[in-house]
Image 1: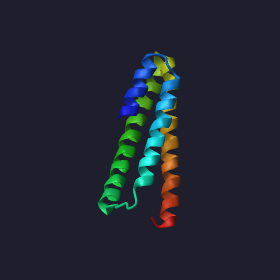
Image 2: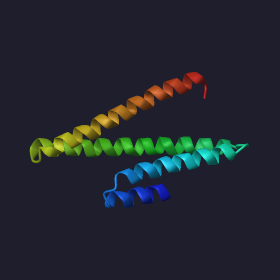
Image 3: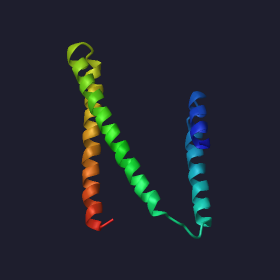
Length: 113
């Protein structure tokens, strides 16, 4: 949260180098914190809930972007030509996400995870 707030604030002040420094410092802090941890306990419920949440987010995002992309392309073809590019970006990014999901699903199912 601190990194997000700092990055947002520094963009308003036109200091482009501070977000980079904040992100690097945050990554270094996380690395130091992770090296101190000896035992990690993972609950199977966390993995199951994480998978369900990811699947729900994927479905909601895909459906929403498809609907908005179709609407944008329709508006772009009739009245506002600039919306055509926006609609295509939404639709192609959704296609890329579905393709990536399918590939990763096949890879993970072959690994048995």
